[in-house]
Image 1 (spheres, rainbow, N blue to C red):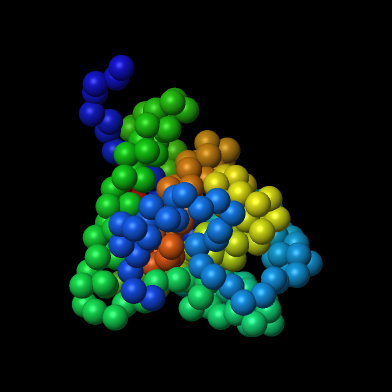
Image 2 (tube, one colour):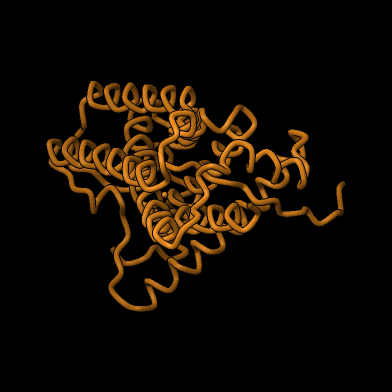
Length: 268
């Protein structure tokens, strides 16, 4: 048994950016297999899902080849804005598919803030999720031979060009982090989770597959970091399933991206 307290290494993220359930709801969510994080009115056709996965694959391969614009010498503002635009376009495509089936984006996201306490509770869960995910990723990173120093150096080599530099860069980076937190959770832990749960009839198996897709979607970060990103997505997915809402994971995702980018900036 390893009694050492794990060192939390910075894990640099991809650039992509109802009444709360009580204890009884959480127990019910754990016990019932085959249910998704949110109810839905109808079934979205699988061709819609296949098309989305195809677009994600093309974007991932393109970013892996170009270094997310680094090799072409694109400026930070252009990279940030382009990433935000295509993430919102993909989210709009998902919204169209959900709406076409008779559902809504609110149902897909789940949860509802009726009181200030509900909002604060989701913030607390989001912060706890983020900290817990960092501990998990630190363990996985060590298992992959990514020590703290090596992990930081690897992140600087792979993603240093994305770190914000000017005041405008920082503002846009925060906007990009919020975009990634919202859009990627809707795309992966919301839409794809629901579609694959319907296909394989087991939400935990679906979550594992979605997490693999999430990791593969960030090919420009390299194989080891793709594993870490997949694990990060799995942590977000577990909380979303238990909470029956994407909101805490959206917050955790946004915090991860925002802090990691600012940390990279400070290490330059």
